[in-house]
Image (tube, rainbow, N blue to C red):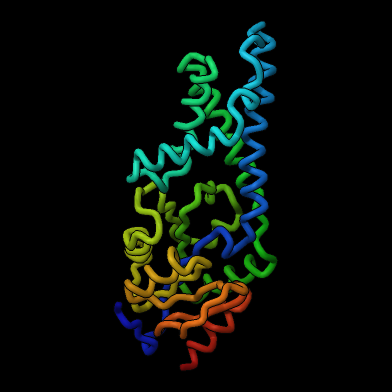
Length: 253
């Protein structure tokens, strides 16, 4: 493991998004249930208008558990695309709609429509109140990038304007902890690992890969227990609001 240097000033900060800049659990639960219920309701209306209600209700014949199971199966069969959540969801929905009895063309149209609803619901995140002013200030001193495994359409959020670079790691088939998404972000920022810090909530997907590359890391750990001492270059924080104070402290060292 490369030991990060604390003597050279930081040039760049890379951020995880979900559960780092906002609480993601409630939004994901709403999105998971919401887009599937939307598909069930709209599809029933469409079939009724075509006098094809004999197919029954989609979500009754194929409940959401079938959708989740099909996604897991696809991830196992296509390991290189396991982090491309949008592709996996589209494929699973299309397959289930065909199994339900729709022609393939109609299945694809409805799968894509359901995913549009998914992305609309997925955007209903609420960044912590400190995040917007914090990023605005940090952007005056550092180059900023986001690296996420999620399939949030981040470019549609106003918050994305603070980031020079946004990496959707799953879509490039290199989800964290794969180092390639970190290296791509750093290359686009023009920063070396030893002059960059990654900020994230996952020990396995954010902190360890960053430190192995020689980056510093801020672990947004909340109340997660961790009995061992922090490795060199890793700083434990309970909340993202503590990041500016950490950076100020490091700047004085």
